[in-house]
Amino acid sequence: MTTPYEPHASDVDPAPRQPGRPGRKLGPIAPGVSSSHRTWLEPVRETYLATGFTLDHLGDRVVLARSKLSELLRGVGLYPRWETIHRLAAELDLPSWPLHRLWRQAALDAGKAPEWIERSTHKAALATARPRPPLEHAALCQLVEADYRFYAQVFLGDRARDAAVQDTFAALWLRWDTALRSPDIRAFAWSLLRATVMARTTHRDGRPELEAAVFDAVALNATQTSPTTAADRMTQLMELFKGISKLPAPQLDVMVLLHLCGLSAEKASALLGVPLATVRADERRAIRYLESTILLPDTEGPAS
Picture: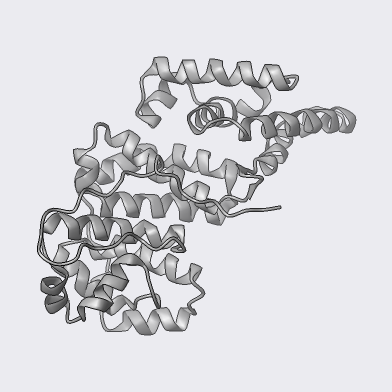
């Protein structure tokens, strides 16, 4: 039975504490809010909480009743129109282009028709033109894009892979100030990628499905092996990938990067933003687990 992925607290940074201010505190995000909705709502809330504004003050500035603004910031009620989000972004000094991209994806996930999205965006069309992101953001995205795509490809089809990577970069842009304050920007960016990819990956019994990657792995050597050999290898790889999918998140990511994407331990360390020793330790733990549960095939095939 396929079950939707629910982001864990470890996937993204928690929102900062709300500074002291008069009036009732802003409530938490509603439990039923989708992961794509949370992707833009969480940084909007973080920015609001950091301003020191009250809901009344911000509501006056964006021309929205306090109760409606509270609902918007908790993800309660109808999905908000872009004109409202655009006014909110202007008051909070948030970049509108990445926010609009993430808002649009969440609107589609919420079942909104493209016509509704276009009507909602029409009055603020100029605000959705793409400006230049911060130079450091652009440089980081250029550096990691190909490897992010390799990772996402293990879990998603081509179109979903590309959308997940670009949405990750939009979320990183939207939270760039938070990323700069984090202990390691690479680790922060990776947490956004992982949360985005896992939210769109099919899960079965609480684990991400990797079986589709088996066919890619077998196809790499299909022309050099007999049908019988290919079938045997597929059976072995199915068991291997099922085992990998049950690993804890850090070990799963390391095994995917090293043995399915073919990256070196040094490259994986840089990509994940963790020490090289951590990557090697996670690989050793993962291999011990896999050896104790299944017969490991030669893993050079998927990594080549």
